[in-house]
Structure formats: structure tokens, C-alpha cells
Image 1 (spheres, one colour):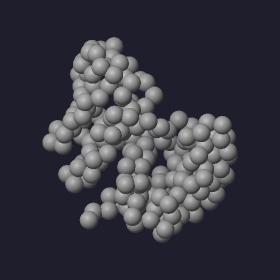
Image 2 (cartoon, one colour):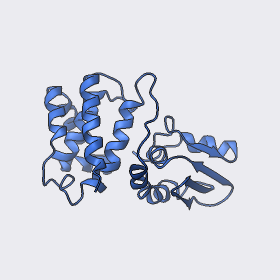
Image 3 (spheres, helix red, strand yellow):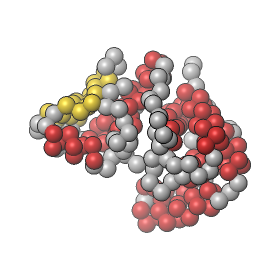
Image 4 (cartoon, helix red, strand yellow):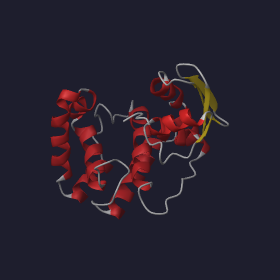
Length: 209
């Protein structure tokens, strides 16, 4: 069985090491050291994730992130490469589901902040694995959007969502749709077809995290 999560983890670690600790990412306020710190913190201090979902504790999460980001960069990357074998997010039973999309998206967060980036050609199997998660993501992200939204990945499938109204279609490869639905609209290579005001609104509203 392909291990896309592990492949993305190691490729991202390679890229982070090559770029160094102060390269940009598309995440506002984060350099590459913050990205590495976030990923290590997520796996080794799962209690810190509470601050992402529960705003009153977000200050504690931010303090922990800054503490991790201040650690020697090479050590952070080494810890990222070798996660806890039986951690709640890294054990073999959940690794692909918990980390496959996480590492793909964060890999692109770093790649697409660099000059002259180009989309990667993911394998058909990898795209198919991403598509398995896109329909639920689309329903959760767009269920209140004031349009009848059709999310399409040619060759993989489609999902209808939205609150109803005028028609809006979002078309792209599964990986590009995943980036779009997780709030990376400005760098996701998708095609929006429908009324311009709705399309522009969907390109600029806050989605995902």
C-alpha cells in the first residue's frame, strides 16, 4: 500500500532543510522555522492543538509554537523526520488518514511561497487518495455558502454542496481542490465558473485553517 503521508513528510523535510529556517511560507506570519515547529508540536504535544479549536487557549498554543520555533532548526527537522512510532497522530493505524493531507497541504504552503513555483504532477493513485477526503471537506467548508456549488475533479468525481441559489462550479485536480477548500484559494489552481460576484467571494472568504 502506498505511503503518501510518509513520502510527503520526507519531501517536506528535505525542502525545509534546503531552504533554511527563514524562508517564507504562504501562511501569514510563518517562516519555515514556524512550519517545522507547528508540525513537530502537532505530533509531540497534541494538547497544544486545543488552542486551534478553542480560541481562549490560542495564546498558549502560540507560546508553545514560538518555543519550538526557537529550537535549533536542524534538530526540528530531524524530529519531523522521525515522529513518535505510536503517537495518537503517527501510529500506523491512522498515519495515512491523519497526515496524508496535512503534509501535502503544508508541503505546498512552503513550495508555493518560493519564486517560480510550479504545480507538482502527483501520481494518479495519490490524487485518488486525496479525492477520498475532498467531498467531506467540500460539504463542511461550503455548506453555508450562498450558492449551489458543484465541486468537480475530472476523472475522480463531483460533489454538490452549498446553501442553494445560483450555480457555481469549482473544477480542479483533487490536490488543488483540497488546497482551495483549506483556505489556500490564492495559490490553488482551480477554475471557477459562475456569477463573478459569487466567484470572487468564494476566492476571498476564509476557508479551512
